[in-house]
Figure 1 (cartoon, rainbow, N blue to C red):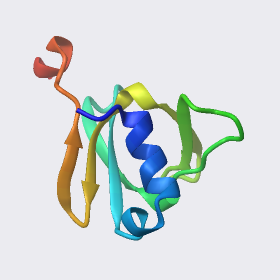
Figure 2 (figure 1 turned 60 degrees about the vertical axis):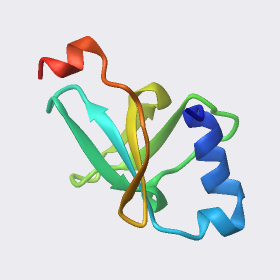
Figure 3 (figure 1 turned 180 degrees about the vertical axis):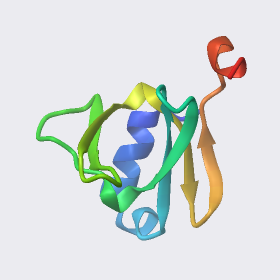
Length: 91
């Protein structure tokens, strides 16, 4: 499986591949669910390789570490997923 950092970089910098519509599914600990957001809503801090920011529905900026990404969709099809950890299966 491709490391998530490599996939994020490919989406960002490979013009042909990145021209598709992407969604990122991250684990929200408070909701106990995977939340999907459009890749175009993600903001990358300068020099930050370990997390991304996005503005949620309430207008608040959230910072999400890359290790909480669980799924990546390209044009609606699942192209990458992280195996669930034992604590996630119980939810």
